[in-house]
Image (cartoon, rainbow, N blue to C red; front, side):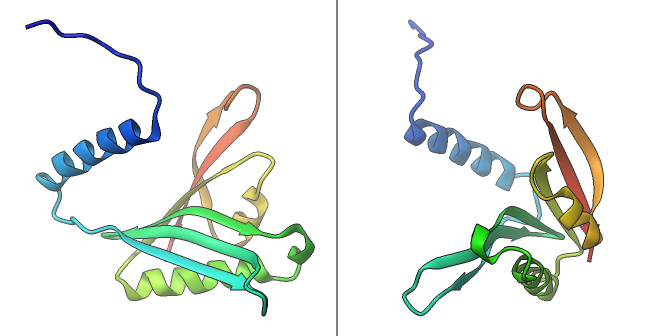
Length: 137
Protein backbone atom coordinates (compact mmCIF):
# COMPACT_ATOMS: atom_id res chain seq x y z
CA UNK A 1 0.00 0.00 0.00
CA UNK A 2 1.35 3.41 -1.00
CA UNK A 3 0.32 6.14 1.48
CA UNK A 4 0.70 9.81 0.58
CA UNK A 5 0.44 13.01 2.59
CA UNK A 6 -1.36 15.59 0.47
CA UNK A 7 -1.97 19.29 1.08
CA UNK A 8 -5.65 20.19 1.46
CA UNK A 9 -6.53 23.61 2.86
CA UNK A 10 -10.18 23.47 1.86
CA UNK A 11 -13.05 24.15 4.23
CA UNK A 12 -14.64 20.87 3.15
CA UNK A 13 -11.60 18.89 4.27
CA UNK A 14 -11.46 20.72 7.62
CA UNK A 15 -15.17 19.98 8.13
CA UNK A 16 -14.60 16.30 7.36
CA UNK A 17 -11.78 16.02 9.90
CA UNK A 18 -13.92 17.82 12.48
CA UNK A 19 -16.79 15.38 11.85
CA UNK A 20 -14.43 12.43 12.36
CA UNK A 21 -13.42 13.86 15.77
CA UNK A 22 -17.08 14.43 16.69
CA UNK A 23 -17.87 10.79 15.84
CA UNK A 24 -14.96 9.58 17.97
CA UNK A 25 -15.92 11.82 20.90
CA UNK A 26 -19.51 10.58 20.84
CA UNK A 27 -18.24 7.13 21.76
CA UNK A 28 -16.66 8.50 24.95
CA UNK A 29 -18.89 11.32 26.23
CA UNK A 30 -22.21 11.05 27.98
CA UNK A 31 -23.28 14.36 26.44
CA UNK A 32 -23.68 13.99 22.71
CA UNK A 33 -25.72 17.00 21.69
CA UNK A 34 -24.39 20.47 21.08
CA UNK A 35 -27.29 22.87 20.69
CA UNK A 36 -26.79 26.23 19.02
CA UNK A 37 -27.75 29.33 20.97
CA UNK A 38 -28.00 32.57 19.03
CA UNK A 39 -29.52 35.98 19.62
CA UNK A 40 -29.64 38.93 17.25
CA UNK A 41 -30.73 42.54 17.26
CA UNK A 42 -31.97 43.92 13.97
CA UNK A 43 -33.87 46.96 12.76
CA UNK A 44 -37.18 47.09 10.86
CA UNK A 45 -35.38 46.49 7.56
CA UNK A 46 -33.74 43.34 8.91
CA UNK A 47 -30.26 44.86 9.16
CA UNK A 48 -28.17 43.05 11.75
CA UNK A 49 -27.07 45.47 14.49
CA UNK A 50 -25.74 43.03 17.09
CA UNK A 51 -25.52 39.32 17.69
CA UNK A 52 -24.29 36.57 19.94
CA UNK A 53 -23.67 33.00 18.84
CA UNK A 54 -22.53 29.95 20.70
CA UNK A 55 -23.64 26.52 21.76
CA UNK A 56 -24.68 24.68 24.89
CA UNK A 57 -22.96 21.40 25.61
CA UNK A 58 -23.63 19.51 28.83
CA UNK A 59 -22.75 21.78 31.76
CA UNK A 60 -21.18 24.37 29.49
CA UNK A 61 -22.28 27.32 27.39
CA UNK A 62 -19.57 28.04 24.84
CA UNK A 63 -19.73 31.58 23.44
CA UNK A 64 -18.20 31.81 19.99
CA UNK A 65 -19.00 35.41 19.05
CA UNK A 66 -20.53 38.55 20.53
CA UNK A 67 -20.62 41.53 18.19
CA UNK A 68 -22.29 44.95 18.33
CA UNK A 69 -22.23 47.39 15.40
CA UNK A 70 -19.97 50.31 16.25
CA UNK A 71 -22.85 52.81 16.02
CA UNK A 72 -24.74 50.90 18.74
CA UNK A 73 -21.94 50.34 21.25
CA UNK A 74 -22.04 51.87 24.76
CA UNK A 75 -25.84 51.40 24.88
CA UNK A 76 -25.90 48.18 26.96
CA UNK A 77 -26.85 46.11 23.92
CA UNK A 78 -23.93 43.72 24.41
CA UNK A 79 -24.83 43.37 28.08
CA UNK A 80 -28.45 42.64 27.25
CA UNK A 81 -27.49 39.99 24.71
CA UNK A 82 -25.00 38.40 27.10
CA UNK A 83 -27.42 38.28 30.04
CA UNK A 84 -30.23 36.87 27.89
CA UNK A 85 -27.92 34.21 26.45
CA UNK A 86 -26.69 33.25 29.93
CA UNK A 87 -30.30 32.94 31.08
CA UNK A 88 -31.18 30.67 28.17
CA UNK A 89 -28.07 28.56 28.79
CA UNK A 90 -28.99 28.20 32.45
CA UNK A 91 -32.50 27.06 31.44
CA UNK A 92 -30.80 24.34 29.37
CA UNK A 93 -28.92 23.15 32.46
CA UNK A 94 -25.60 24.90 31.90
CA UNK A 95 -23.57 25.75 35.00
CA UNK A 96 -20.59 27.45 33.36
CA UNK A 97 -19.75 29.72 30.42
CA UNK A 98 -16.50 29.60 28.43
CA UNK A 99 -15.30 32.18 25.91
CA UNK A 100 -12.15 33.70 24.54
CA UNK A 101 -11.31 37.29 23.70
CA UNK A 102 -8.26 39.10 22.38
CA UNK A 103 -6.37 41.83 24.22
CA UNK A 104 -7.87 44.58 22.03
CA UNK A 105 -11.42 43.22 22.22
CA UNK A 106 -13.71 42.92 25.24
CA UNK A 107 -11.83 41.56 28.28
CA UNK A 108 -12.92 44.43 30.62
CA UNK A 109 -16.53 44.04 29.41
CA UNK A 110 -16.58 40.36 30.31
CA UNK A 111 -14.86 40.98 33.65
CA UNK A 112 -17.63 43.44 34.55
CA UNK A 113 -20.07 40.60 33.93
CA UNK A 114 -18.32 38.20 36.29
CA UNK A 115 -16.00 36.37 33.90
CA UNK A 116 -12.53 35.45 35.15
CA UNK A 117 -9.41 34.73 33.12
CA UNK A 118 -8.46 31.06 33.36
CA UNK A 119 -5.59 31.08 30.91
CA UNK A 120 -3.71 33.57 28.75
CA UNK A 121 -2.08 32.61 25.48
CA UNK A 122 0.78 35.07 24.99
CA UNK A 123 2.29 35.99 21.61
CA UNK A 124 -1.06 35.38 19.89
CA UNK A 125 -1.04 35.46 16.96
CA UNK A 126 2.30 37.27 17.14
CA UNK A 127 2.49 40.08 19.70
CA UNK A 128 -0.98 40.04 21.29
CA UNK A 129 -2.70 37.97 23.96
CA UNK A 130 -5.75 35.72 23.87
CA UNK A 131 -7.71 35.36 27.11
CA UNK A 132 -9.77 32.27 27.91
CA UNK A 133 -12.46 33.26 30.40
CA UNK A 134 -15.01 31.36 32.50
CA UNK A 135 -18.07 32.34 34.49
CA UNK A 136 -20.07 30.24 36.93
CA UNK A 137 -23.79 30.68 36.25
